[in-house]
Amino acid sequence: AGKPEFAEFSVDWTEEAMKHFPQHEGIRALRGEVLLKAGRFGEALPFFQNSIHAQEPSARAAVLICQLAEGQTPALAPSENETQLSVEFVNWYRRLLAARSMEGLKKVNARVQVLRSILPNAAGMLEQAFKTAQPE
Figure (cartoon, rainbow, N blue to C red):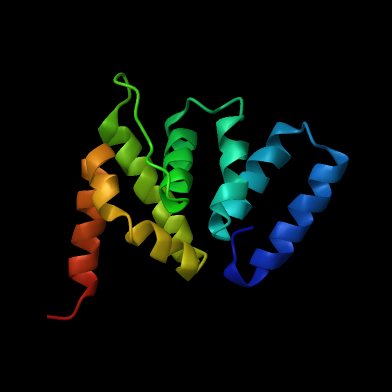
């Protein structure tokens, strides 16, 4: 699931695995990750929302990136640690980069202003990376 050239295979493999073991939490987690990295955010979203790990920062950040890319306006609970979620959000963004999910990245990039309203630290990190990547 880690190499971009195996992305389609990973999507197919996890789909087959889900047919045989639909309740297996490890397969469900892998399916969500594979779909997210493939830029299939709407399909990935339920795998993170319905996970036994749904309240962990990495899963919460995956939900936020999926919602953002799907055009939804995500919300944070007042008790959530914005800094930790921002770090996890950027980690998912890096996974999209590593997977060369250009369409997925475009969807997220187009919503940086919305991101700023929910995860200002993540938006700042992404904007700084954009500036660094742009030739002067």
